[in-house]
Image (cartoon, rainbow, N blue to C red; front, side, top):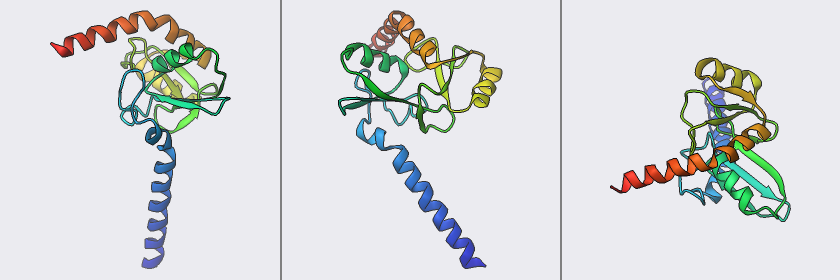
Length: 164
């Protein structure tokens, strides 16, 4: 009986380690955000990955930086857009995710937070606790572009303060 329990625990540990390694492959490839330099492992709950039809890909820390990436590469066609699930931090399909825009939880690179959830129930639970509006990926990306000027200004001011 003791051997069986130890075997089950060993297998669970191996599977857990394999899952973490597989789930973090994008972070190993792009450990920091190309645009802002933020640690993508620290922001695993908001990170994004784009895979283009030409085979290239890039990981960012947030939808704010992904909006920058997509705007700068307008001639490249995204094949896949992935985002970190707010709760599990695992990458999910950004276009199928349930997005929450706004609320009282500070966003990443933005005043107007944008969070992704794999399950609608998780998004609704988050809204009940923190506020915000249930939205689609298109809504979240549109909000990211609409917020870009104010967010960029905010980031510049924060960095200026940090240098003093």
